[in-house]
Length: 317
Image (cartoon, rainbow, N blue to C red; front, side):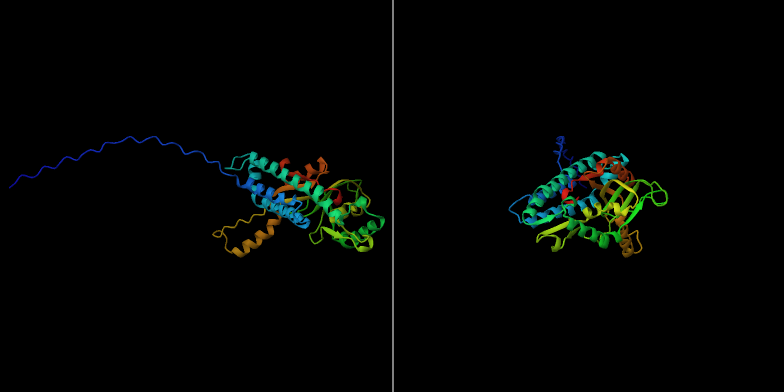
């Protein structure tokens, strides 16, 4: 019987030491939120171009306003929450909120400069004007006063703040006024702060009739109509400081389909509650006093960086 063949020894493969891996170069990613603001800057650039039809330039300005509203309603809340908590939540920090607020302030300042310094003068050259209270003729003032008493005054409900009347719920993006009063009301209460909520059903601009317009196209702003008749809302009181204001609230809908029994009901409730979500931005008139602006910031639980002073121009005064 032939002997069993001996197994051949296996050849050893020499082990080549692996070369050290070179770390991949860092990639600078674009910040999504600042890219959104940069996009709106490019949209705003179209409102500056004289070659664009005047009404289209105004439309671009309105597009930016709508985009900024949506931006704060959806994108600002994580930055604000991290800032208020003093925490570092991924990309969201106090510094990120401050940078976002600073970039938005520059954009809004540019936006209102275009509106006040370029568009309004261009409309005036074409016979279209927004007439401020101090520029109205006696006939125009009488017409505005009658319009206020007939169309506006019945829909306004001034609320004087005191322990039994706390700060009211202010809907998202609604027009409101804050007033500082002197003296006492009819019940002897010295409540110095009052809030006037303006319903959305009222038009923001009202065209004056031909009888008081001398053949021109003249408008008055709703805010100017109310400002010039605040004294009528507080009979017997001294109207001191006042300002219009608008608050933007977090309105992003977040519904987990697995945790809700009825998705339709959850969406319906979410659509209702989004008008009174967390405040993320407060806009006041440029001339609003520090006392009133700080009072509003405390009521809405907002830091100073969330305050935006808007230069509305003389036409709206």
